[in-house]
Amino acid sequence: MKKLHTIGDYTYPFEDINARPEKIIYNHKGFGFVHYNPERPGMKRNTDWWCILKINKDITRYYRYWIYNRYGIKLYPPAWDAHISIVRGQEPPNNGYWEKYNNTRLEFYYSDWVRGSVDLKFWNIMVSCTKGQLLRNELGIHNEPKFHITIGRLYE
Image (cartoon, rainbow, N blue to C red):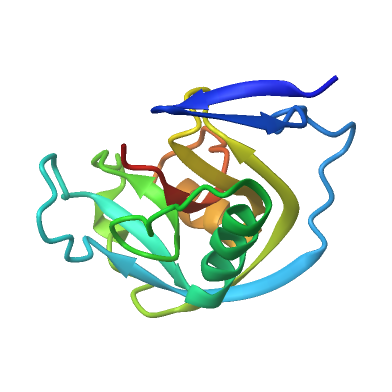
């Protein structure tokens, strides 16, 4: 039996979109370029101490297209469009290394597993980015983030 999810005034029949597979397989390879404190016009919260990997926009366009055609949900691109957040607005302990890798090309691997947030407003795919973690470690940030690519968000 399919689950029903309500978004705004609409109810959609989904398989359990957030059912985690037994093992996440990172079967696609991509690359992007490191950017520090990127411009984010209209951002209401702090945009200092952000480091992102700008990636090919076609990745997120493809998945937004797929979600629209499968579920009829129109998602909008994230504020920085296609990217992977490496540092998310926290001043690193070793900030002397900040901007060391500006415009450096990093490789990453991403999964086909599409997941929505609990309220289905944000949709993303999981990412493995070893060099992104090494960059964080060099800055003194040692926890391992759940790297992901936000495909898009739903505005009601």
